[in-house]
Amino acid sequence: MTKSLRDVSLVVPVYNEVESIAELYNWCINVLSSHKISYEILFVDDGSDDGSWEVISALTSKDTCVKGIRFTRNYGKSAALHMGFKTTSGSTVITLDADLQDSPAEIPELHRMIQEEGYHLVSGWKKKRKDPLEKRIPSKFFNYITRLVSGIKLHDFNCGLKAYKAEVIKNISVYGEMHRYIPLLAKWNGFKKIGEKVVDHNPRKYGRTKFGFERYIKGFLDLLSIVFVTRFNKNPMHFFGTLGTLSFASGFFITLYVIGKKIYEIQQELPARDVVDQPLFFMALVALIIGVQLFLAGFLAEIVILNNPKKDEYLVSEKLNIE
Image (cartoon, rainbow, N blue to C red; front, side):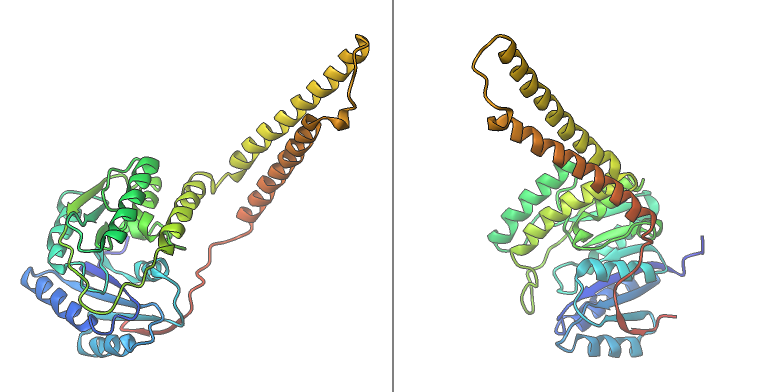
C-alpha cells in the first residue's frame, strides 16, 4: 500500500454554500495548524450554481493543499463523497458538511481515535442537535430502524462529521443516497471496529437546508436496498430462488389439494364443484406463475452480475490541484 502523504484528508461536499466555504476553510486551517496536523482539503462541488466553484478556485490558488472537483450537474451527496474518497491521500479521512453546522474543532480528536485507538470508523453524534423538531423526530426514527437492522449501536448514522481509516473508504462504494449508511457498508465489508463521538452541532448560519422530507422516504428505500445488495449481491439466486421455491411449492400443494378434493368428492358421490370455479385454483395458479418469475429474476440477476463491471457515472468538468 502506498504511504499516505498527509495525516488528514478533509472531504467537503458542496452544493450552493458560497457564503460559508471561505469561513469553513479558515476555521479548518486554524485547527489543523494549531495541532500541527498535515492536511489536504478536498472540496467536491456537486453542481452548484451560486458561485461556490469560484470561491473554491480562489482557495486552490491560495493554498496548494486545497483541491477541488466540480461535477457538471447535481448528483447528490453520495456521489460527491465517492469521488472525494477516490482522490484522498491522507491516513485519516474526515468528512464534514460545508454549512458550518459541523465543527472542525472535532478533527484532532477524531484523527487520534482512528490512529491511536485503532477504530476503522468514528461517527459523530449530534447529541444536542440544533435543528427544528420536524427534522429531529424523523431522524430519531430512522436511526432506530437502522440500529435494529444493522446491529451497529450508533445514535446518529446521518451525521456528516465522520472519520475513517484510509483503507476503509478505499474499499467501499457509495452511491444513490447511501452516504447515511456508510457504517453498514463498512461493517459488511469487514471493518467492524466502529466508534462514536459526541460532537458539537451548530445552527445553520447561511442559506437553507438542501434536504426536504423526501430524503426520509429515499433513506428508507435505500436501507432496504443496501440490506439486499450487501447480503445478496454475489448470489441473488439465493434470495429470488428462496422466494420462488416457497411460492411455487405453495401453488403446487394447493393444486394437489384442489385436485385431490375433487377426486374424493367424485368417489364419494358428493356434490363437486369444477376446479376452475374454486378461488383456491386461481390462488395456486398465481403462486406457480410468481414462483417461476422469481426463478427467472434470479437467473437474470446472476447474468447481470457476471457481465456488469462497476463504472463511475459522474461527469467531472474541472479538477484543481489534483494530479
